[in-house]
Length: 106
Length: 106
DNA sequence: CTAATATTCAACCAGATGGTTGACTATGTC
DNA sequence: GACATAGTCAACCATCTGGTTGAATATTAG
Image (cartoon, rainbow over all chains, first blue to last red; front, side, top):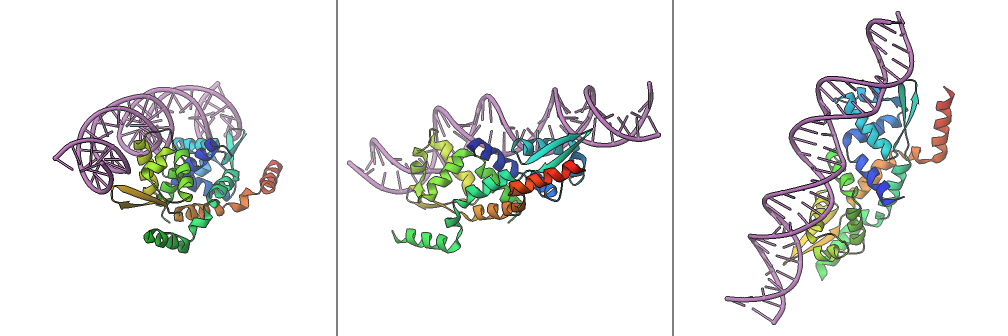
């Protein structure tokens, strides 16, 4: 995955509304209006958020008449999980503590 | 983990320079100057990036005289992995294909 | 004491972001 | 045809971002 694509994925998910949209779409496809109904912001704002998610490849849109059907495309999430997993070794609290101890020593 | 903390973590990692800093610190602690040496931007710019990472809890700083020792704190990465793992079900390409098929049907 | 080193702070700039409102396009319904 | 519905586009605004340069602060070295 290109660095720019990872940029877009991380950036897209750095907004709580957009993460909530992802969560919503995990429950099944929806139209723009359906998604917007959940949020206290304007439909236009939701439309913009969807464009960001779409550009990051997290949402796919299919036009059906005047309605746009949105579905979750989770492949970028897998790339994020893959990136973070490179640092799994550091997640362990005990390892963190050991590192701290070793640094204290020198 | 609070939504705001997740916001900060995702946002911090949406920049390629900051991801490279994380990668650098995974190789061991370093001073600000050491980190900055790798990048074609000013030391000041790196200093700002470090502040962003620190605010997201991804970097811890210990002052030792005039030097600041930086170390990776990967706990926020674990939270990100946890968040993305909620959508593991959707990562599977075959499932994506199935979903597409089912939608085509109605 | 002086000079060099490590780092931050402050001001500035261009461009992105997240929100708004108002107008527009396209499709469906009566 | 007339009206309602689904959605975008465009302009605007305040704030954030990533970078710069120049000055300030602290610590170490000569």
